Image (cartoon, rainbow, N blue to C red; front, top):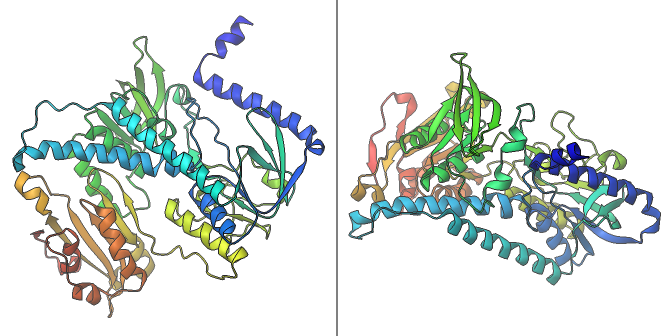
Length: 523
């Protein structure tokens, strides 16, 4: 018994115990299915994230009887949160706010150039920042609950799984069983961070993006493992608020994004204090008597092994869809066996015509909040509003909120060349210096724009890539033109707003093909 109690003290053991206990309750609940009273709906949405809530609210607005089933399994470290999904609780919202905290630090350093006398040294309080961010997130959780209530959407805080094609069984944290049936079911369960379970100590001592925003104390010296946008965004704001931060990347940064832009991002981060271990893979995480974590890794280039100590190890190596506990096989819903994502068609329908999947859980969809929201609304309108409009997943703009922000829409240069051939692609580009950087003499070496076009007239714009301040705001504006099929000539005929970084886009005139080096322009 003593040995068993000792084994249950660690965070991973507690996580496994919770899972074991939940499994026992679920099995007991399954035996009691016949005893529960079944509730029927026109639409049942499984998952209370951005896409699921948008779909549910839209269907309710159209006069249908709607239910949402949502349950958040605590992370292995025990972190839990409320209604709203990844974006609201452990993604876009807290990330952008902490990114803003880091940008404010840079602005304070610049302030004396503009006449402000700021007391030195500047101090940052993680505790105060985290509390403010967490309070805002909690207000959004409450707001979502109120919106569902206002629209008469029935909310169930239950862990749902399929019983058959029209019936879902839900178990709450107390073990109570609820049976729900619906004419239409939408799966919008999203995904969770991936742990490298093959690495000893990874789950016991590491955290993920599920945890970083809810830490009450500063993470201190941090190792971020991975080169995804989540990895670089987190490393960026951690460095920006003054923490010793290292990124360990196995191969290339920002896989799937334009690689020239990705390289400029990591160059900028390196020159502003973030350390990079390139071509390295961790092999062991060990907790020292001091409480620090000793990380051992292998450098693939040299074949040598190395170690260092950190206060926190943050895994940012990808995400896995939340499909494994849904009992999809009981409903006949097919998944991709390689990644467990649900296979859908253009209508968002699964292999079962009245069961749909939207957002990160669906195969081949961008893992972006706005696409899930739009897809959810359009799906509800097709089901209940006599609409036939499909979600268009082409030319979706996005932004990576690294210290120097990267906004893009359309094809990367690599994708354009692969699709159309090098001889049919023209790239216009320029470096520029934002006006705000001039008085402070900030380094603008990586402020860069490129427009990827077809070479043949009318030179349709295939992609736009912008690296610099307020990249999301800039990219959102140009995304409309690109979505409407803008040509290079039309962009050049557009009058810029002066003095802004956006106006640099409408002044691009040097082609990469020409061999001329772009000069640095000023806003």
